[in-house]
Amino acid sequence: MPAPDLSRFPAIGHLVLVRAYHEERLVAVLPNLPQPSPAGQLGSADLPGPAGQTGSADALRVVHGLLDRDGRIGAQGAKDGLAVLARLGQEGSPAGGVLKRALGGKPVTLKAIASPVPDLLARLGQRKGSKEDTLAFVDLLNAGDVRAAEKVDGAWQPQPYVIDGILNFFGAHDNQRMDGQWWDKVPQKTQGWSDAEFAAAGVRFAPGCRVRTGCYIGPGTVIMNHGFVNIGAYVAGQGVMVDVAARVASCAQIGRNVKFGAGSGIEGILEPAGRLPSIIEDHAKIGAMCEVSGIVGEGSVLASGVVMASGKRIYDEGTGKVVPNLELTVAGVTYQIPVIPPYRLAVGGALLSEGGRTATDAVILKPGDLRDRDTLKHFEKQGILYQ
Image 1: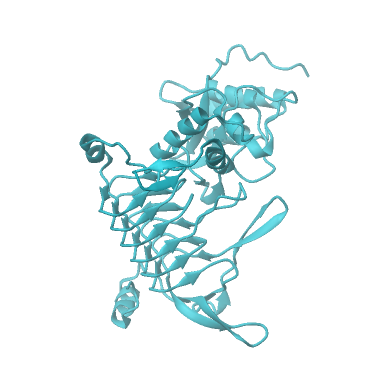
Image 2 (image 1 turned 30 degrees about the vertical axis):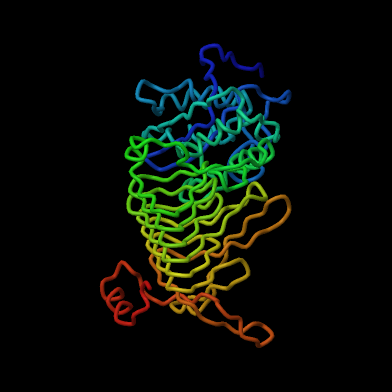
């Protein structure tokens, strides 16, 4: 079958990525590498999402070329585009999956993020980006345009190119004197900001907090004294409180209206590229002195001192069973990521190991749904809801 004529699909220029939404639900994150490899395929290392996915730069060009004036693709456009992708052998690619969403009559919306420099992801993915490339990428991180993980079709997916970009930044920059007393590679996010820039950000930076460049801090966030947010982190804002000496580490993803108690810590991830970072979903509350690695579901609460880490079992008193971990395989290594389901209360506890020894700091989930008023009142009376 001859290759289709793509001349009717305009070249899409230099983009970092395209996000596809179906009924306001994110269904795909597609990068644009304008120059396809000789085989016409993008390697799985270049494509966000689970390892093994591949896509075509031409396929993305087709999808982008189908957009109407409102940035949407309707059923007829999707049908025409899938016919072209079939001739490209790309009907089963992520781009094809986006078009299939629109066949049922509900349009797909695409939101494209422009690249500040050409072929940025390609160079960063090979760790060959210049200082200028890495600074351009840090600007995208600061703006929240790229994230280390995205919730696609209701499931969190790592975006490996973010890790590549951050590691490329470290490799391209030398330590230098900062603020007269520090010797480091990563400056503060607010270095050199004017009063107008602080006001526009809508963030309260209390004295003594440390927020490194390359993280997104949404408006409505409060970062108290000695709070720390590292490069690659994403903090949605709208009511987020990072209390005194609380830490949000590299690439951690924090939702809206999340409260971090004093001294709590959210683990970071910088290697390997492709591993999920720690994620705290909307409206969750993390008690004082907690240490969190994994995913805390929407609306859940961790009482003070809970340790949630790889290898820790999470026992659900409601079911009498251990909550299954999320398994993610990267480069042949399988990682066990602990998960707290939405709207549950977790407190510190102890479980017996297979050898009969006590395993301290396991997490025990109290039965009940925190959306239920009676459950909420019960835990409040016990004094363990959020301390």
